[in-house]
Amino acid sequence: MVQQRLLLLMPNFLSEDQCQSLIGQAMQCPAGVAPVDDYGSTPSPVALRRTTLLETPTAINQQIIQPLERIKPQLQRHFDLVLNRHEMPQFLQYQPGDYFKPHTDLSDAPIYRERRLSLILCLNDHRQYQGGRLVFYLSNPDQPGRFLGVPVPPQSGLLIAFRPELLHEVVAVTNGERFTVVTWLAD
Image (tube, rainbow, N blue to C red; front, side, top):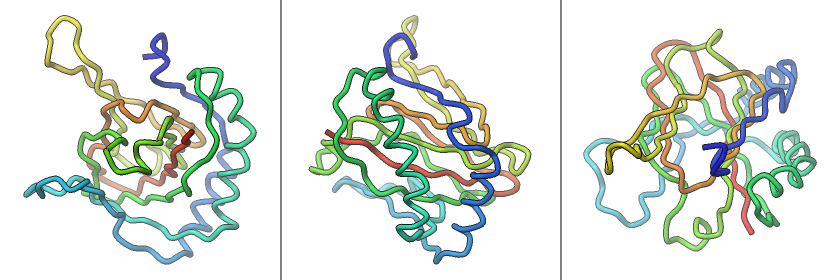
C-alpha cells in the first residue's frame, strides 16, 4: 500500500492530551445519526453504517483544520496530488454494535468526484474500546477477485490518509466507545 502511495500513517499527529480534550469538547455537542449517502443505489436490508455524528461548531473543527493545513504540503508530496480545499470534519462516536461496512469514499455525486484524499484521525485507542478496527481491503494478487484485509491498529493521535477509492470498513465496536474525526481533501 505504501509503495503504491495509497496510504500514509502519521502517528502523533495530535497529542493524547489534545485528543482527550477534543473528545470532551465534542461530547458536549448535539448528537445525531451519522448520515449515509447511498448515491441513489437500491437500499440494502443491512444498513451500511451505524454510528453517531457529534455536531461540532467551527471552533472545535478549527482544532483539526489548522494542523491539517500545516501538513498539506507533506500530503501533496506523498500522494503526488494538488489539494485545494477540504470538507468539514465529522466527529464520529462508535458505541457497542456500531460499524461501517466495506465501502469507498467515492461516487458519481459532484462533491464526491472531487475527493482526492480521505483522512481519519483516531482520537482514542483500544485502552478505551474493543472491536472497531479500521480495515483496508487490497486485491489479492494470487487470487483475482479476492481481497486481503489489512487492519490498522488504533493509536490516539494517529492520522490515516488514504486514496478515497481504497475499500475500507470499521468493524463493529464490542465494548467502550471509539472516537474518530473524518474529512476529505479535494482538488
